[in-house]
Image: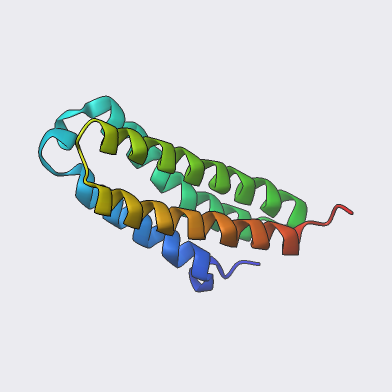
Length: 119
């Protein structure tokens, strides 16, 4: 615990957050305050909750925050699909960001399993 910057999943989540910030700065997307803000909040939540969970004093607390991060990754995927449907991002961008978000979700699932103290 307490070494979140060394976690591969945290670094991947930071990469996703940075890339989402870059695409939401573009053209029409940046003018859609509601979707832009919601997507940014969700993507920021992923590495933030990984860090907070890793800093907690118990595995039980860590697992709670890792689950929140996993839920935020699903939220990001949903919002990216909406952005694609309304023309803010192209299919290649959707696929790239979704693949990274799915990789993060899978890593979080494994991290949760390894830290879960419940039978």
